[in-house]
Image 1 (spheres, helix red, strand yellow):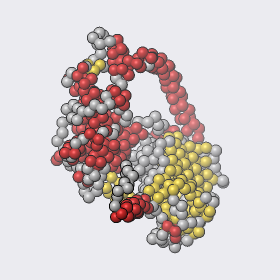
Image 2: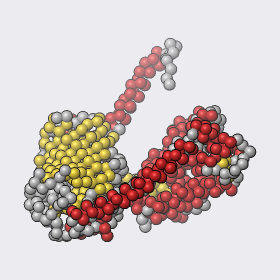
Image 3: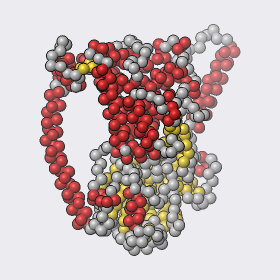
Image 4: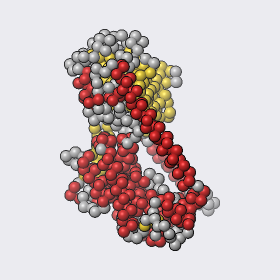
Length: 604
């Protein structure tokens, strides 16, 4: 912190100081102005079908922007489709429409409170930075399509190519002349975790988890043939589109019954509900037993014993405050998994995924690159694998490497989107890796004499016996020492810039320490500690290359994507026969190929 200027400063210094402050202020201002940021918080879409098959669409975008001049939404249209009557409003003020005379290079002020079209893009000026809510309205001609057998809506309402995926969305489709219901229609949803349902003559879709990059909202609606006077005719049958949409989805085409009646679907749903109810009855009985056991285990005495012998990381860190361990504990980072689990380290699965990624990068077997894809050259990260450098012996690392190899293409590249889709479809591979992290660690600790199975009698107190029963094993004296080495090492990493001597500026060693910091869940903090001592650390690190200064945040993004994809794939959402037949219910994370209306969007 800058102290007060001393009275003894020379006149020159006194004159120079305001100039220095002014220089820093100007630099800060420039950085602030050009620190572009886009955060799409929510998108709401309301569709009203018209008798000629067109759709009047109203969208509400809740967005936070900084450093941009305009927002845009791209729409890929079929041959007989067109966008008409595009309007935008903000805080009750309707924007002036420039039609197709939209200038991408116009200034912020020139675009303010104006809207227009640039090819297949709908464009509007940001007008006011910060958190804003924009109201969009437009009509799409021939929105409903006529296949060889049925009419349909097959549309990307939230594109996977948006520059920033919204945290939440909702889509409603309605028709004044032909209410949408299970009696006459069928529905499916793709690209997100959530639901799609018939409700009071409408189709309603919504997500139940924030969208990640590459997620979407794609809806497929079957409509009886010739319901709307659309001029958009297709050469394929509706079932051709269903089959294409189901590829890579959670829906089962073998369960799809195109001839299922309203009564058939209701019977399917009733049967599925009965099955679920039977499970719930058993679950209630089981839950009662589990609750009773939980109550006993978590009695006052048990909690006291557990905290005494097996405290969490933060508690033990406070108990060992000021004590440091400069050497990384154990033979490698994987040996300590069970000890960190014993210390209740948060997000341990995600932490070790990141540790694996950094270990492979440091070994030269894995690198990260930024690629541009799609019509709008949207940037995303991709792994590049080098099997020639894959020389490692740790079992969890081998399992993780095998997973990446299986997911990558023939050139050894693995994009974010492909990695996410692979985990969702092959979540067992990731699950096996996670289990191996724990079982391998336990086995190595047991062989090394750091932990042992429960014994009926112990030289320690009854409290120790009670605490060990809760964790399922007991640490030996050596085990407690190694656990505390991890805690002291944790203290060391957190205070690295305060206690580290300046001569220890060895980037290669720091890269290794960052792997352990990832396992502890503090790599972002530790990276900043390194930067305090060496401002060029990020640039000099093994993890930064290819002309791009990758940081820990980039690697964490990939590990978080893997972990989230796994938990989404193993969630309680089960696609049933009635859902595959179009009765509504849970959406599918994958699938939705061949849909219309996508194209991306964002800010510029």
